[in-house]
Amino acid sequence: MTTSTTSQSSAAAPLVDLQALVVAVRRRRRLWSAMALLGLLAGAAVAVLLPPPPSAVTKVLVAHQEDQPNDTGTLIRTDVELLGTTRIAELALRSLKSPEKPEDFMRDYRGTGLTNNLLQIDVTGDSDADAVARAKALADAFVADHVRRMREAAKAESDALLDQRDRMRAELAEVNKEIGDRSPESDPEAAAGIESLFARRAELNSRIADFDQRAAEARTGTPRVIAGTQIVDAPRAVRHSLPRAAATDAGIGLVLGLVLGLALAAVGAVVADRPVLRRDIAANLGASVIAELPHRTGRLWQRRRTRAARRRLTASLTRTVRGSAEPVSLLELGCARGASVIALDVARALAADGPVVIVDGLPGPQLDGRRPKPGDPTVVSGERAAAVSHHERRLGVGSVAPGTAWTDLRYLGTRTVLVVRAGHGSAAWLHTVARQLADQRIPVIGVVLIDPDPRDRTDGTLWDGLHTALRGHSERPARQNGGGTSHAVQAAGEGPRRTERQPLWAARVPDNDQEAR
Image 1 (cartoon, rainbow, N blue to C red):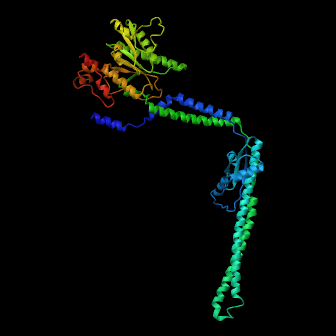
Image 2 (image 1 turned 180 degrees about the vertical axis):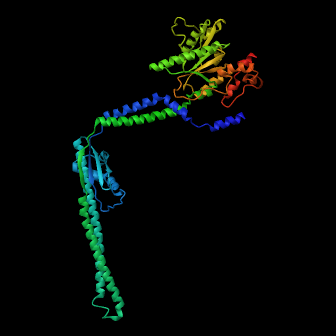
Image 3 (image 1 turned 45 degrees about the vertical axis):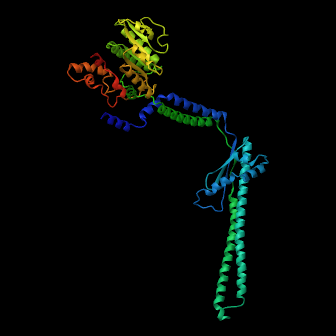
């Protein structure tokens, strides 16, 4: 039944926990804030160090013979593409008497169709005067080429119509020759044939007149197109404002940097898989979060809050160590300095009951290299832990970071409190820590969470893990004295019960009450 429940829970779990992802991204605000600031500075630097070249702009009104009210912009797009041809570029360079190649000149200008008949030309140059001259040469070259094409098209259409008219006239001459002086009254026998010839002659006359009219209209429409194609906005230099360009580029760089930073933070959070929320850390370690210590900041009101939280944490851990019949250790993960400070505070509080010795198992000089103050407890290294008198209370401090000598942790204490920095260890490593502690038969009393997310509203208590949570140790005697069936009694007969939220290794953690019995 437990297996099926666990499989159903795993199947129902989302692929990506959005709440954990948002918290992880928010905790990496230094990354995406730095990326946004870098983008802001890069954008401003680009505007200052790489200013836009001198440029000019002009507008040309383009009339087309085939203009229609429902045109979708096909004709003006054709004009834009024609502007970007070597023929137009060569004409403009010829008027400028420039030796530049047309292919190189084409990279310095571009056309934009504003409406169906309005073309804008943007040109860059070595100076404002050069850019204006290039824009004028381009506009004149385009207008001249457009007029020439319109004239050639009109002439070709007119010549084609006149050719058709001439062929009709030649056919009309043959029909007139066949008719001659005959008429239906003079030749009654051939009246039908003569009437068809007369009808053919009338049709040819009509078509000849139509071709004459169409040819005249084709020639008449050309001047209208030629007159309608002109430069409506004289070439002028474009003024660039450095502050405006810097502000625009900086804003664009800020947005791009922020988006890139958020993307990198999100991808890094998913790939690293480092739990931040209380519920995830407790679930991966198999122990409840019993206390928290917020991150130290320079703000006055937050420093007061941090000191108050530190006093509460010290009092809670002092009661835990004082009420334990076995040595207790503090094992840190990602917060060696914080664990050493907590150990010193707890040891000072325990000094009122008798001599206290701190067994230093940290890999760094957090305790060994410090300067002792009056009233501080004695600090010994792990090698001298065996020489500590039984009349002195021991408090071990060690680490469960990668590279830990797991077999030495039991000499620091047979029960432990994990001091974990939120978001430091991966889920796989938290599982490794819990499994190794279980193999060493070191029960985890609880987890002290360092630098928790201030907006985390999840619960860090494992309600199904009474044998590891602090509340479980206070409930066992009450249940046993009352005659109820406690988890310890049940575990003695059936073994530790594994529930849905407990990892597999948690079932191997022995209960101290069982060992005592």
